[in-house]
Image (cartoon, rainbow, N blue to C red):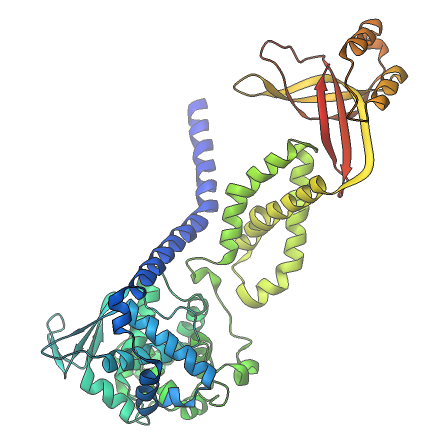
Amino acid sequence: MEIIFYIFLYGFLALIVFLTLYRPIRYLYYKCTDLIFWIRLKKQSNSVEGFRLKGDAKYYDEILQDKISYYRTLSNASKTKFLNRINRFIYSKKFIGKEGFEVDLETQVLISAAAIQLTFGLKNYFFSSFTKIYVYPDSFYYRPGGKYHKGNTATQDFINLSYKHFLEGYENSQDKINLGLHEMTHALEFNYLFGSTYDHLFADFYDSWTDLEEIEFDKMKLEKDHFLRKYAKANIHEFFAVSVEHFFEDPASFKDTAPELYYRLCTLLNQDPLNTYGDFSLSRASNKIYHIKRNVLNRSGHWSYSIMLSGIFLGILAIFYLVDKIDISTAKIILLVLCSAVTGAILQYTYFKKNYWPGVIHFIMYNLFGFGIWFTFLILLGNRLIETDITDTSFYQVDRIYYNTIEGNSADVRVCKITHEAFQAIALLYEDETIEIDYQNIRLLLQVLPKDDRQIDFSDCIEPKVVFELDQKIMGKTLLISRTKGLFGFYVIKRLLII
């Protein structure tokens, strides 16, 4: 029975540890994949081949001014941002011509422009799960589907485009059909659903969009006439892609017909196509979108995970390092962490509720293992670095040994103050650390005064860590300890000597 009990006990503890660390470790994994992607991108963009591919900004501008109405509407500063993003997007992808089509720089710029237009309000615009874009001269036969396509996007790796139909999408900006935006929307969504590196804002609002999208999609299947074109009925992913086409090409009618769906799409892409004088920012729609909820749990990671992860693995070690020289009990440290966590929860509740509400459990765990631990560390660090004028030098006697290390030459002990006036007089003399300790005189006093006559105050005890010789018995020993009160009221041990 005892074995079964311990199996269940350790199994339960292992489950608690797993549930606590799963998301932080998953977050760390995704951060590593992010870093690998950025290193690869940086290496490619710095290569000689990459700079041959890079075009003159003026050449990019001329192409976009002629073909992309979205780009023409931007301010000069936003145009610069748009051009820079196109350049980096080109470096991150391989553009491959098919069926005799030759991919030139203009082709790459225009196709990249569709991706940048779609993601201009987002920070991550690379669709890193997709590394290849195949460009066909016209409609092409796609063998897995068994029919001809103008474009299609796999769940990962590649995008297929008919360049003829891609250009037609930008030649007529009022027909609500844009092949480039359509396929890039699939890439954006699939990159989030099946990839590891994606935009966090898009992830936050994806659930809010899909909740309403599914309702509208079901409604569309029952209605004969719908403001979106019929192809949106094919499946939920096509509904999303067709919605984006309509969103950019005829935003006014979209907003008038389905305002709630329009504003959900605004928050998802972080832009408002009707705000042509404000670089399509959400400033005009701010009073219409405040109620739309974010779901930070959809992210592969949020900054709160890095705080929590570092608190568990680094913060606790940092605290243990500091308390070696601070007169503070384990119970007080735990109480300090709890108080810090409560303080953090009170101070940050409004911010998290408004911006990144991750759920009650995550919020508690973040404040306890993240904010609470690091705030406690800062308190103890400030206490150790900033000292007051209050000092105390006294003799103590070892009353109890709590723990011995494996090496056997250090221990956590409880020592209680010796209040006999003879010891206090000598201790007062040694407040000046420059005065050399007269061990012989102190040991003589210890021989004269037996333990029972030393007037030990068992209500004034501290628990320092003591380092001693391997053959030295520490129990009952007398210590000379000099302490200075720190900024937050905890004494810092400046000197500890075994007599």
